[in-house]
Length: 237
Image (cartoon, rainbow, N blue to C red; front, side, top):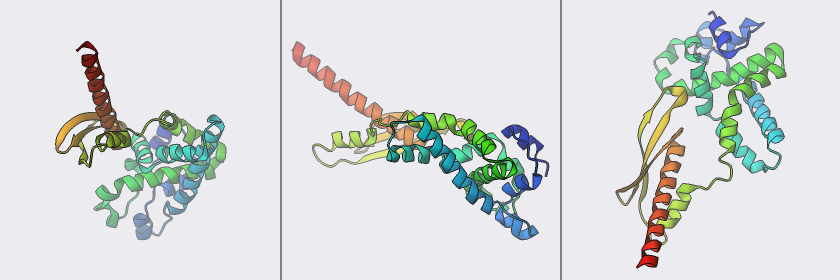
């Protein structure tokens, strides 16, 4: 397979083309054609990705505690983030899948593509060393790490909303994702928040979790505004 378009997409040209081929070879294909799969590369790439993002967080955010850095790293290099990057660089066009996997690919697609990102990181590392692997990682994960770091210390609005509503007894709180839009690498989700079957608010976010959190935040703001109006009426009454 010709990987020149992929190399152009990622901004890196391999000296050893066998490495990039292996990074996109699924186990089902390697079993059928007796070649090497990406599994060992994925193992190495996962460790490199964790190290580089950990080092970046450690050097950039001097005051963050270990637990906070772990949360940011986990949110930044999760399967969804890896999958989004794979879609951005058109990884599906370069995958080598065996016949046994082709029919099942619609189910395993996200996990396989996420694995390929980690395998590619290892392939770059083996091809030319840690500096180029770091360059690839930081250029592609810097923004999402910074974005997730902005949420550090932010209030857990879902917990706060639950505490407000359950002060006077148990209630049924339900979050439902009612819509999504945008391309795979830049999706937007809409969530609905209901209390005892009644719609309280809506929220939009870049992930399902963020949409639910925004719905809870909006609901809390509605409650706060009602309290302000009530206080004004009492003062004017």
